Image (cartoon, rainbow, N blue to C red; front, side, top):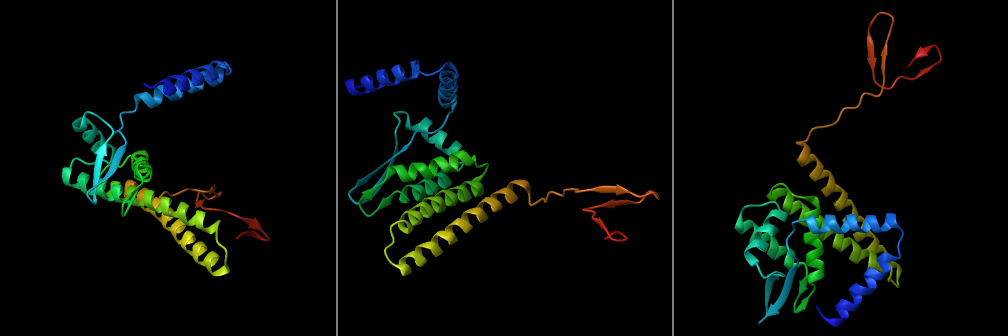
Length: 207
């Protein structure tokens, strides 16, 4: 650890010590939960001879790779290799590398906790669509003409609708397509016949 990092840690500890006890306890709880998570290390992207190289910020690559496979919910090495390559490509454009964007999409996948390869693919698409939505939102805030505004707004709306559709698709897949039935009201008449549903009264009786 460098002198600057040690100094930053000292300042952080000093700031934490000045907090009220309930906030210090909350920070301690968060730190414990973070340390307890067995997640894969972040990806490290590099461009070598015009070829995108994908690595992991870990000295134990075998264990890190297994953790990464667990994060995306697969036991298939070929699927893992293909999906990670696609996620890595989201953070690269020509010779420009943005590991942060790829690691963000990976974090989205991890947070969804995919149970199989189909969920992993959908989770990856959700991360990519969200990233694209934020890019279009940024463009919308910097438009200078009405046509630019209309174009950015249409694209942003399409991306937002796509994201909600993806969320619905994931929910349906996980529940097996089952629909929840809610009984709003149950009324039993004097003859013993039950009426199920929303019942409104008015005029000469029930409508």
